[in-house]
Length: 380
Image (cartoon, rainbow, N blue to C red; front, side, top):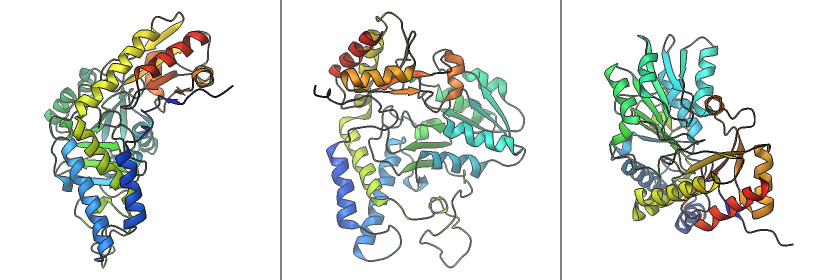
């Protein structure tokens, strides 16, 4: 019996497939340029630096029109988040995070708390993964320096009120770190940095780029200490890292093919408008949630805004079993488990197994929704 066609619904982890222009840009940089950015004056090295510069400019545009010189590139969003958290916090600081946050935020904070460096408060979310900004205001202390919040939950898709959280932090003299892993490329940034002081995001999720690049934007005056220290190609006569941003955060060799792919991916999104692309993905998620809700024994947990994510459980079935069966029955590839966000499941009531998660990208169709729903009906 032939295998069912592949129906990929795990875009919240890594978007797939990529637009052809993205893969072409990656291949061109890898095959033709083949040089290190910022290290020499020969033609290909100059072109490599130009690729990095164009990627910075593209990120500046989609981050709400921020200065490209304030965009630093890291080896993934987890590194970007660790750079911001470890590079800004000092002994005695208090940090507010949320139950909706990803482990890429909560684990670095927990590690600092365990070592006695900081005090940490984790405010709750509701049963849909949404955080009340007033809970952040209530948790504020005189020593509070930083608020961390995911822009949209990677379990429910719920969009947080970044404007309200930003206002609370600004009025009290703190900093606001926005984890835009599930929104940048899906939700338009209409103000610089989404109103935050620091934004981190990966290239490989909704931006439709490839793995290997994280984006870290810090507004002027927010200067994290370097997380990784080494060569940058500038001020090489000094043992100290360069003071200038972003060079201070960009030790090591840039992934030029991935930066070329990122620039092409952002161009692809801009040509089609991020709001339009995100709207199509979100409509598929809403349709999926509505149809799954009609299946007896299925509990759907989906916000219907923010990220195009649908989490669900099937009565008397482990999420891992459901995911495996969905692929076997219909070729549908979804994720199961905790999704690196354990705290939110306390409030969703979905421990210990977590949920099954479907997430829709720009190349999914209504047929993918129908295939998933039909598979779940068969399982339930």
